[in-house]
Amino acid sequence: MTVQRISAFADGDRGGNPAGVVIGDTLPSPDRMQAIAAEVGFSETAFAMPVPEGWRVRYFSPETEVPFCGHATIALGAALAGREGDGVFTLQLNNDTITVEGTRKGAGIAAALQSPATKSTPAAPELGDAALALFGYAREDLDPRIPAAIAEAGATHLVIGLNNREALRRMSYDLDDGRIFMREAGLVTISLVYAETEKLFHVRNPFASGGVLEDPATGAAAAALGGYLRDLNWPGVAGSGGEISIVQGEDMGMRSLLTVDIPAEPGTSIRVSGAARVMGEDEG
Image 1 (tube, one colour):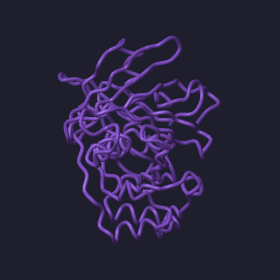
Image 2: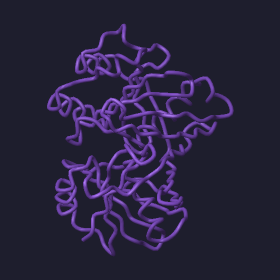
Image 3: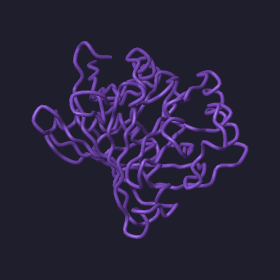
Image 4: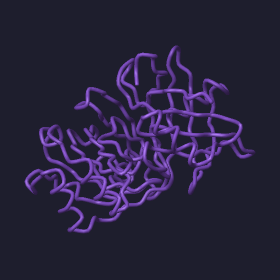
């Protein structure tokens, strides 16, 4: 069984979020997929097999299965383009059907996913307070334009808006405490978000629920954030839709770039795109 190692949402020939990709005629057993993901050690590994309608896909972090992972989907799109040629591939997830597009560009590959449908709801005050305590933030660190919310696009995320870049930079928390908090709240990640402009966002995504302190690029959370900004009638998105850029992983030394295209109609799929690169033997 071959595990491809591909970095999704790369910044040129650097950065991005590493993902494992396993493509086979059948899927291994869930226990075997979990063991492979733990051995690979990346935040997620995608497993895919061909089916009449496209590809059946499951995602595993080192500790648990997740319903949808954006960066592993981008990595899978790159792997499928390398195997099948450029195209749009239909993916059957546990709970949704989505697509990923892979396009070879010289030595690299561009990929774009169409997320599951989105929705968002205000976070309960006690949940927001507990999250602030987890990270050691004060209310003075919050951006009132982006109230704490539960945002979904195939997976569930808590979004917290911060009003300055330094607050984002100093993000820290205890992994075990974060794991308990996120699993009890049913969260896949927490999105800590700073809006430098209406179109440029800096983001950090703790992923303690999967046993990972932080993801350097999170496509599923980017899609959920796009849907939430649409629900907020965010400038540049309200009315006719729009595009935002996300810089993530910068404070980890793994700068990643994500482009999020947000259509106008509430609840509809979000397109998240970026570059992918096959990792060298000295990486990961």
